[in-house]
Image (cartoon, rainbow, N blue to C red; front, side, top):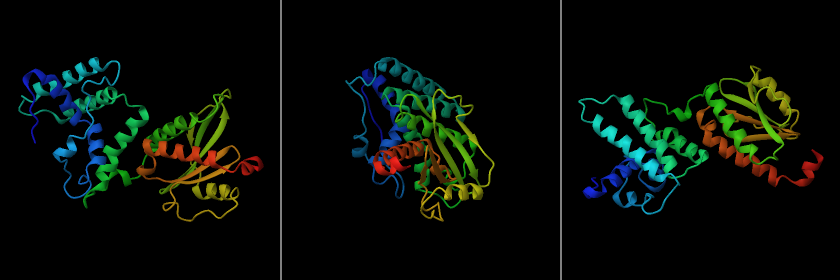
Length: 274
């Protein structure tokens, strides 16, 4: 499919090119194109025309500056395309620049960017897995990913708290399949050495400990109940499978909203007796 622009609108054509090659456009196409997740992914012309694109509306205050930066990236790519072979890392860097500029152009928040990035990087590839490759969405995660999740989770939860309060997190036990995350409510003025730490404790010992807090039997398969949460006094315990799908930044935002909803809808009598 080709899109033709008059010569005097070359700048608009280049901005559209940048937009259509961004993760934001992929995200919109994935949610608005029925055939994207079945068979060979494709975007029909009528569906492509539904993608939001700024024309006379100014998206952000520095939109003109961002437009010029987008043009600079596209022009640089156009020059490099005259080479016999453009290094893939050079193209990857340029595409990343386009993504960040498009996010600014549409005035997206950090939370919205996290949803888009996780969808394009992990969820879409997992919608059509191959026999030879296991999608990253299903693979185990490392400490760096857990730290990113906890940072997103605590940042989102802190928005629901009083200004003088703060949330700290601790991974109190894990094995190859699951981990137990403990969230505690602290006074922001308190001298908290670490916002997040990880312990090498056995998950069996940690589970036995939190089971003593529960008044009901805990589920035996946390893979089937990945959103298990146990509140005890000023602490919250999360038992999570150690797969990326449960530790993405967008997953942290969903968990934060669910936790806040749990607290808001908790029976007042139960809170008074806790």
